[in-house]
Length: 383
Ligand SMILES: Nc1ncnc2c1ncn2[C@@H]1O[C@H](COP(=O)(O)OP(=O)(O)O)[C@@H](O)[C@H]1O
Ligand SMILES: [Mg+2]
Image 1 (spheres, protein in one colour):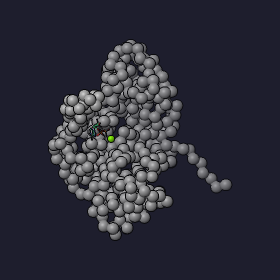
Image 2 (tube, rainbow, N blue to C red):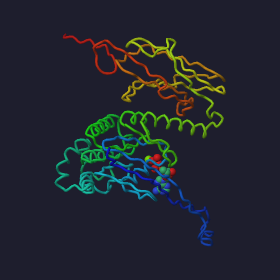
Image 3 (tube, rainbow, N blue to C red):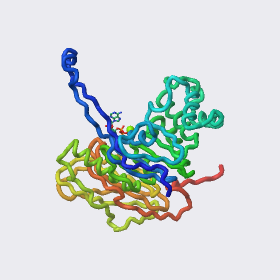
Image 4 (cartoon, rainbow, N blue to C red):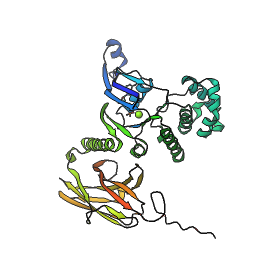
């Protein structure tokens, strides 16, 4: 496969100057106090992205995702290492990067086009499509500084996808704006994938990574801790999330709760569509712990079928082995294999205490005639 993005041993550090909190008099007397610290935002990152691949970059806030994308797009110069790109690149970086806020939306479209090497005629040719996609026609001659963040992102996304780039780089922007527009953007990214273009995609939304990415890179405090198949990388990301949360909030919980297995009394995860399924999760805890239990079901294509209400499922774990029963009243899914993730979250459902990705795979057989992933039982007749 041809590498279109080749990141070789990239490091980036920032110099941060700390002013000591002094009175003006002290500062005049001792002008050179305060200190300069070097902050390592990225440490020796290497990976390549092949033609037509969609690669996700995940990591906590501050792990270095945006810094990495900025280096790739040439907005920041890495302290060491080398980046090679093959083909044209359009980037949607964090809000604030990109547009000239004093100019109108229209002028920014032309300016952005020019930056990517588009002549005025070429921008003319795509202009209507850009405005149409952005859905901000009535504001196109308004200065961008009066745009809401949603409008800004709409226009930026519309330009980036219409300038026909070989490589599209997207940083978090899909989190802004309403859900309908987000869905439209995700659709557009899907089409990009199908056209065989290369996409680098940063998000904190694991579901989007699952749905869109072939591969994912995981950053943690500037280090690359995983680069592999999406499912594997997300598992590593979650495990780190767990360790981190535990290290920060409740050190005594570290590794004390594990999900050992998910089994069925029948010993088989093969079911007929529409029937129920009982599962038992074996959880070993070294201490008593009250939290919430959550399950997620995904298609093999990475689409979230269902996630249980975490706050609605409290469990009181006792020291030793616990069995958590999971009853699925009926599974109206069509033919296919569905992967089950299970986890224990804290009471507020914002910290993962224990997690098992792909704890079980459920094989559903369906002999009805509907298509898709779920049986609606539609009956259609002429009135
Ligand atoms: N220009 C800068 N000067 C100093 N520190 C920075 C600068 N840009 C980013 N950082 C720091 O680098 C780290 C990584 O930031 P960033 O790449 O934005 O993370 P992410 O996008 O993963 O949330 C953070 O700790 C951030 O504070
Ligand atoms: Mg960021």
